[in-house]
Amino acid sequence: MLLRAIIDSIESVAPRSAQEQWDNSGMQVGDTGRDIQSVLLTTDVTPAVVDEAIMRGCQLIVSHHPLLFHGLKQVCGQTPQAKAVEMAIKHDIAIYSAHTSLDCVSGGINTRLADKLKLTDVKPLMENGLGAIGKLPNPVTFADFIGHIRAILNCTYVRYTRAKKSEIQTVALCGGAGAEFINEAIAQGADVYLTADCKYHDFCDADGQIGLIDIDHWISERHAREIFRDILAPLGIQCFISEKDQTPIQILKQ
Image (cartoon, rainbow, N blue to C red; front, side, top):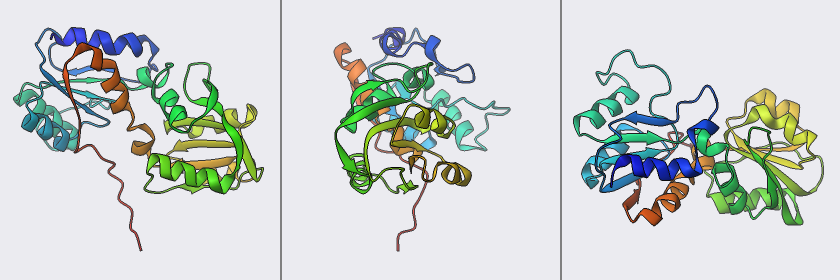
């Protein structure tokens, strides 16, 4: 199957026109006219992931986070990014990324995360489609909801502030780094806001106003791989979810 046909399928759900201006969704490495027999699906493109693609005989890697986000001045393997590019070119592996193009659409990252948490009446949190807000079927205690998140998403850690109410039902969320939308979640009446990469002062400002819940960035978005698999399934092409794709954040457990 031609790579451009695979890209057309992905972009029928996550068009590049939907991405944020600062983003770099789309082709990262390779020629859209080449033939593809198998695809490796991943959140991040690392040397370990490219090596897995080589071992599996995949001609294409589809990722959520773009490999080429910050400019490369040299491709000599000095950084993990440069090494991944070098390996992919050497072994003739194409790379395509759908980042905010997958974040900003219905059926994308935030819709899938809301589905996993069993939210109903889900709608975008922001006008550009980023984030989501919905309701739990029934009110639950804040403590029980945190336990629900940890179990459903298999979180390595959960950081949080006090919620305004002891029982919560309206949930806002944004997969990835979404601290900039905390005030919008409050304005829309959310009891809790789930996202990643929050800073100390984000917690200070949210404490007692909304139950701010912060989890690992990779964990909040790793279901992108499932979305890619579902998009490509009708094509009948062989897809593998990467076993080497994992969060770089390690937790010291006592």
